[in-house]
Length: 143
Image 1: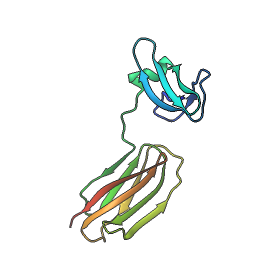
Image 2: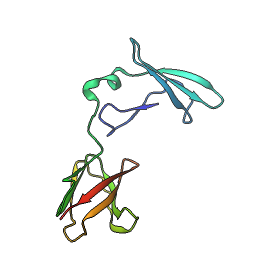
Image 3: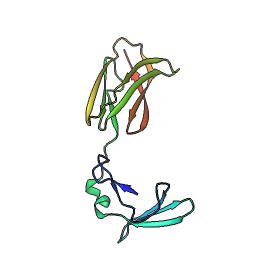
Image 4: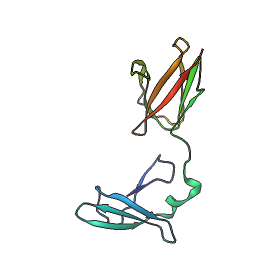
């Protein structure tokens, strides 16, 4: 079991003798003495204490992974990644590629400004690679 108390920038192992790496979190009990229950093939269910620092609400990040604005837009679109962005791709709703950039950034809190002023008005899909996820959201271009 790994936990982070800084929004995912660093991770600490806390498995207290549990079998791993094939453990699946089943339940987290936050009452009095917090524990996590996990299940893994061949070893059944196990539990491990959760360090108090990982349960602190003041250290929980509520930021979204990415912010895209303005939307709708007519000239520029800003893509703000709170975590490193690996790539940005924009397609129309039929899948035609309009923009593709591999970034493989290691920097946090980066903002990218894209000039889309020459594009036709309509609906587009932005695909953003961030934190081993692909985030897809619509982009509306007006004129």
